[in-house]
Length: 154
Image 1 (cartoon, rainbow, N blue to C red):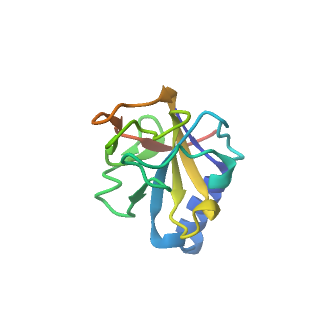
Image 2: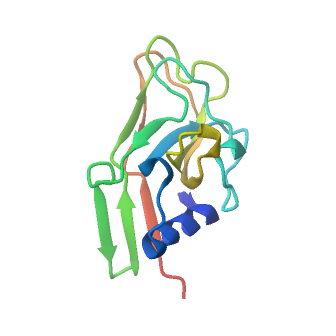
Image 3: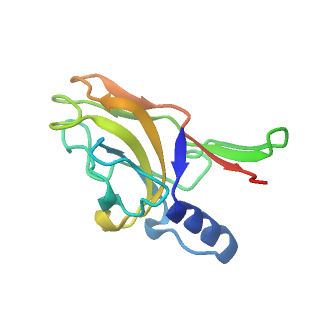
């Protein structure tokens, strides 16, 4: 189940209603360890611990563009009174050793803005990977149909 942070809600509303810009012009998705659990009050990338870089994983994760390719689903659901968008499938493949390269496995997938200063990236939403994930050389961590929902609250 994803969680949209309060900072994420603030930025989504500011972008749409006030034409606020997105730092870096887009988003990034990084993998975080279980050292901290994200909550609605988690604001910055530095509030979480990113997995170790190397072996096919780069600091800050993968860039996500603000377009119909990277956000490949946008749906209005009148039956359930919500709207949703989905990210394209994101794959991190271990190359030259395990992924992560050392330490704890990936527990959270985290969507941030693409601020050039990694530690200043603001967290939009996060997904629980249920358990720590470590994969061997040649194997992948695949994130399929990561969804962000906007639900009506009566």
